[in-house]
Length: 301
Image 1 (tube, helix red, strand yellow):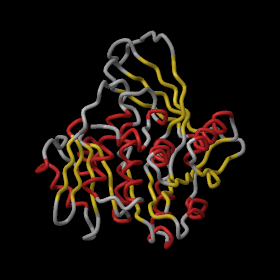
Image 2 (cartoon, helix red, strand yellow):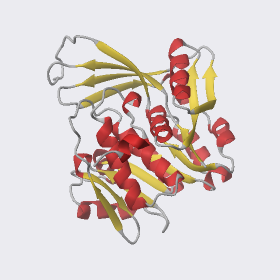
Image 3 (cartoon, helix red, strand yellow):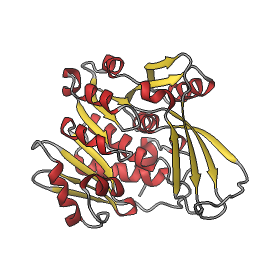
Image 4 (cartoon, helix red, strand yellow):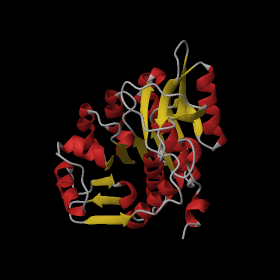
């Protein structure tokens, strides 16, 4: 079986700030760090390192950044045969400002990502593909076309509805599993505050259009929860040894959760494993480089 990821591939430039930033302020940083990223690439790497055969679909430019992105995926064993290389276009790029303590702000230049097409992605949806995973850093109409295809309906369609984009809500009925963080969940449901308790999450049932759908909400250090039509599953967070960089933690959770679904792991255990993987990722620098292996997750107490 395998996981197919349709999503973004970005070259990340991370700037570590000496103090918490304020609007209008100019700060001097000691150095910058370059790494591969993008929600799609991050999640593909997370799934692959957790042991699932993983295939990436999307688009990069015919530039040095594109070659670097494809090379990094290949190094992690991710199949990139269906990533289109577009002549004359630049690859996606992101600038990440990381504050002391690990919190971050990210600005993304989409580049070739918006040219990723559903038709090409359908080429990986064969009988071996159990899970199809996407995010919202590519064209939403293309995601809709992909998720509504006959080939996709034979998979478990998972949407990480991030970043929170109002138009993304039209995809919800096409999904088997939806994943939000607290902020995205509040934005999509029009809540006046972020959820803090399991009772706060029950409103998620408003998003369910079929009895077999699942809404998953990550709650930061608290843990994560899954809301189904007839029950709620909660998995407490795993304390991180030392938080260095939170960028990519949500992608780590999504990729590992998708791998768990692919591997037939039950929802209760899958949430625990995804929490544990994310807790490891925040102790490392970078997004994709921070993704742990399945062995590392298993070694946690």
